[in-house]
Image 1 (spheres, rainbow, N blue to C red):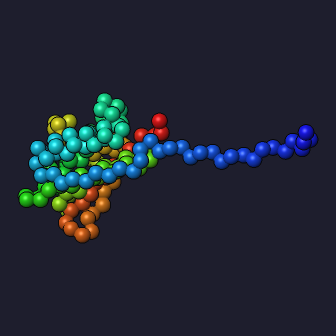
Image 2 (image 1 turned 135 degrees about the vertical axis):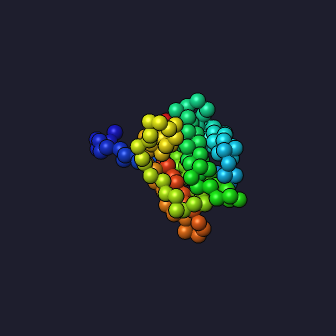
Image 3 (image 1 turned 135 degrees about the horizontal axis):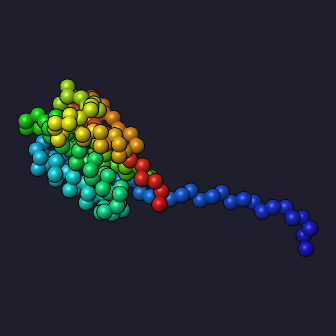
Length: 155
């Protein structure tokens, strides 16, 4: 019997599996209300396929963000004959929504909505529901990209 009771070597902890492996989805849509609705619907289907089920809080928030940013691209970023682009990406537990439109001179800003109008609350919703959001001008073409990030945490 060995009288040496030295501690056993400690095994390194296994890294936690990310909730989502890396995913990416990009598609162009017509700059019309119909295109914005289709973007929301396809985003919802894609999120469900990635393991963010319909009816979950994360799914509801992300599809609302897609709807708001797509509607803004149609309303404020529309150039006749040009589409807007939706890009979704998931890595680890972080999901990113990007919507690119063709009007770089129309920059997004948080403003206090008018009590008389039903519009003007989209970016306020995006800011309230996400961990961070912002925008940047396109470098290789006219336009801008508005993005939002949501960290859904590890399950």
